Image 1 (tube, one colour):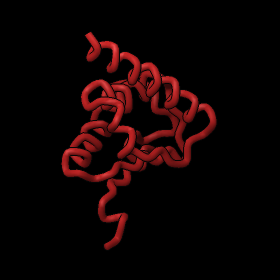
Image 2 (cartoon, helix red, strand yellow):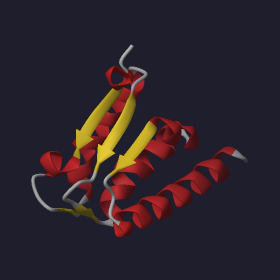
Image 3 (cartoon, one colour):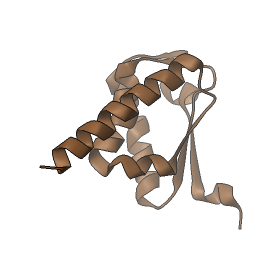
Image 4 (cartoon, one colour):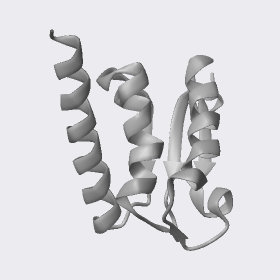
Length: 107
């Protein structure tokens, strides 16, 4: 069995049509594609080659996934070709949204 058949590869450069993904509205269709793939039991690969992002974009892309599906969703998401800045933004958003998810579920 080919492991890649269980993955959906989303190249953000082609999805966002530019070198900078800065606004939430650009992230929505990409997140929706990811949600569809995850609902089908697939792993999602976000490929950041050739693109820089803002915290707002990552919050809409990754933060919304965590708030909707819980921190465990990160076990099925791969972040590829991230710059140091992009990786730092992803880590910040993921940590913040995981904490928020757990706080809202612990009461």
